Image (cartoon, rainbow, N blue to C red; front, side):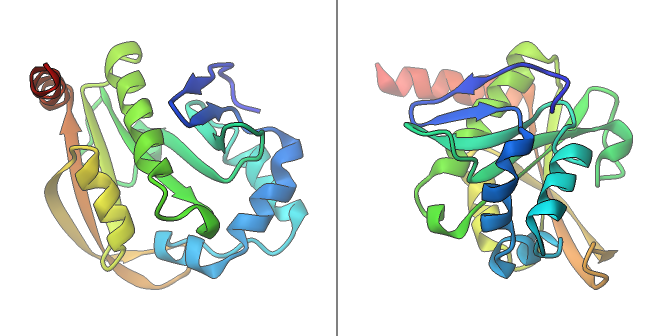
Length: 193
């Protein structure tokens, strides 16, 4: 469904474009209120609704199904928002915002940090992104931990933001620049020697 045919690989994952036949697995994981509520979107109510999300939302460029290997079941999502679609007002022309989620049975396995790190590499090496942003609502400790593990640094907090659930929330934003990522990568390489 995505306008890109790019497939990304990590040690334990395949990140691939969403397909309409992923609607059943998407519904299975996205219907759980624990998944969407923390991110500010309502739980899915049917396979058809999930199929519509795949067509209308997950077909966007640089949006990937998170698939543990071996296997082909989509159990989560990682993707980018660009320019006018970003939730952050201070993003620039060469900026993107990264978002992610994973089904509850896969929480705590490190899949999302692994997927995010791979997409970060794609952003800074292949796509020419200068700054990546990431946001999460107050209290979403799992998302905050992913951001910390992946090198994002706190930037600012927006208050009284309207979520897709219709409530008002506090949202914290972090960012990672290409320069910070390159410096961190060099430090990791030096430590590994």
